[in-house]
Length: 478
Image 1 (spheres, helix red, strand yellow):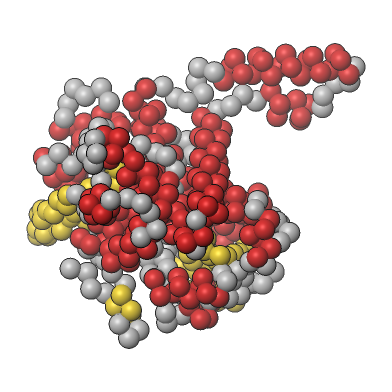
Image 2 (tube, rainbow, N blue to C red):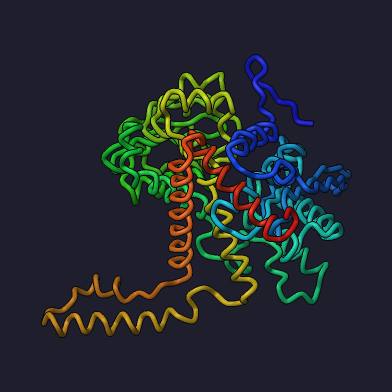
């Protein structure tokens, strides 16, 4: 059991935190108690120990795969590699996936998996062995498959691990025409989809944009004037944190003033050059020593930088009772899963800090994973059939405009206008529309029922209501 605590007994068990968040929202809903208990429970957990030969010895590894809810099939959720993985963490993350999918109307149940080890302590060949053996265990117990359970990348895993999973699955279940759909987050050349790598970061950007469209809320929290020039601090400079920093600075005009990672971080009140910082990190392996900045010594120090938007994009339980009083921001945009503890969340709400919750804001990854899954099932790339037709129509439209006005369209603008929608354009368009619709639904729920109090409770209420409706429509709870 995971019984982690911090600072005088604050509960850091993610399963307990998610359960209490569920209870808070459920108490405001007219849903039968038995149905609420079914939605809240984790339906199945597979625990496995498996040996892998590492050099001249054998090591025993622990792995899990949890299926929180099967009201929709397949179940969906990432696989993380970390020494901190526990069964209750995997169960909690699977629950968050259920609610996340419901919020953005992605027809999956929630799942999550993990193997307890640090991949940085092993060679790529050894990580491949561990990945393939873990996949084989999932296949043998029917915990993976295009219509059963579809993994994706998470902490400590990426495109390469997903390719190994797909290859192992195909080798063990030969003859399945849809085998590539057994996992998402694959390299584009192996059935992946363009835009998936940056999808979670994109979703965070789109979610923040949508929040800023509600002027009354921005006035309430002191964030008037739009995103241009807003000071942003980000904890985490991996895939998600990097893309959030890149998109907010390059496309929305935000000033990214601080970025932190596991070893500390960097800060510059005038703003950081995200591209140069990423290049430096890739060369040196960290952020320390980057010129022209002030250094932050601890992994949580960046959370205390005064800013307009704080983006926790690392691990759970980072904003807690021991540091929440030193958090100086107007908005917290939760890009990570469970970055704020229950006690800290209550204090932030009392102080008038706007919190955009994780179960909505980081749903970009699973949304684009859904697009990849459908691509694998249809066996055709998005945009392949319509792109040229789109370009022909655009060319005719531009030519008509030139004829009517008697003026030629400049070459650069002509090229931009004539470009047909490619796969990544369609993916980003679908993701943006999904994040817009979901935020509006959460915000409308909050307006209709003031008892929900905050965006997190409203998001849970929306998710629970959708899952409950699914069960009742299936006839499980007449």
